[in-house]
Image (tube, rainbow, N blue to C red; front, side):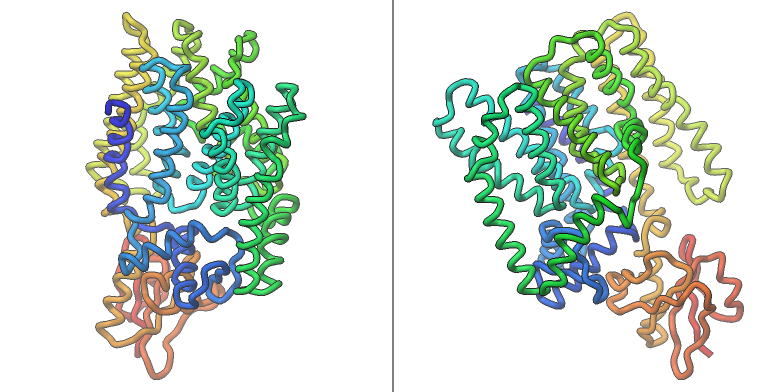
Length: 520
């Protein structure tokens, strides 16, 4: 039962975030709006966003959003976040069991804590996106491949477990595709092939990627594509298979970044463990570390993922998520060789020293740049906890015992406690995170004056406010100034800084926004 304690602590730390955070306007609110349209139109394989075909993403995650709406009657953050939180815990637990024989108890705990508190992984565990879901299925697929590989090496290719893995492998790959798209197959395919080439065993590729694997994938994909064609026609299918797939990979219409993008983003994506993880891997590589077969496999996955994603035109730091678990666990397996090294202690001391500055940095930040709305007591306390954990980490890492694993536990514990503490102030920040508070005030005013005419001006991604309002929203062009509509009142939502353009109209301020009643 002790091995589950870090998972419980992680979930408790994120509890305030699950309870009080609002949906972000860019992607999260859009997914909710798309799911609502699918429920109204009774479609399950084709989707639209305000009538415009939305073939960007496969159905699996949107089904979860639709299920939540059907079960609970509305979109609830705590339920939808489970679609990221539960897969994140599965990923950690799968890697923990997989590498258990290579790590002692303290090493396993350190690896779990590093992965759970690495910046992007922890953030994606409570973000309403399909990336963590895909990451889970990719990890499961790569583990299945390795089990099949080991069974072949050990002469157990015909036992019951191996037969089950031969079916599970393509199912996991399909579910990864069904979660996010082509990355779900490309990463397991290329990683496994490159590993077989490295092991001089490429002639066995047909055992893993043979008739059974491709048969399952073709059958399931054909059923998916056929149902999408039945609902949306040829145009939707072409959009899904060609425009969204090859367009993003070769000539991105969004997120076009240079080839070296991931070489930069990796340093902040796995913070505060970047120096420790990348430093350990780099040192082990150049000091002729004696690589175990599992370490070779993990390194192959990391390099293949990095090179493959760098070759694609469309790049955002989230795409590299499936590589992070393997990076951290590879470093954890190697770390025991360098526990007494000065550079390893320094790789923890530097981020710890940065954490020491959290409280003074926050105190300065809230008084400059118009961020006074962040001046909340629990955020100060959370910053103080980070600073204190930084001090304690430095004491531990340079104390008498120079205990690396204890230092990792102290820093990770401080981060989780700070997240838990600061998270309780999210209820006061909802108006700055999403549109829930703004739309709540707009609906209240609309009911009072008897109108359902909602308009927005100078607000980004406002079209998806229909999730909150229950009505379509008129988005007024930015180069036009909204006026009254003859014969009835309308509710205008805009940024607070533009409220003075509507002097004489009743105005309600909601955080950085304003609700204005346009009526004569």
